[in-house]
Length: 102
Image 1 (cartoon, rainbow, N blue to C red):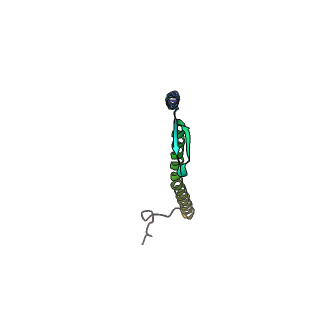
Image 2: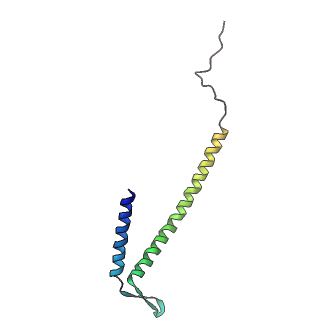
């Protein structure tokens, strides 16, 4: 299975590398107040992808922290319930026998 994953990674790398070599044209990015930059298209795509990935990770981080907090709270509740449970078993009604009368 590891070999298959490495083959897929290598194919993806060469596919993206070929994409980068084919798209080395300069593009102009126009900003406010008349300023502009000329950058290779691959660099612009890479920066946009990285910014999107960082934004996604940042958006997920809040819910991840909330879940971890809830898991900690539930673990503490479970430990408290286990601690408060009686150590000796409580006999059920089937085990309790009425005293014999003579």
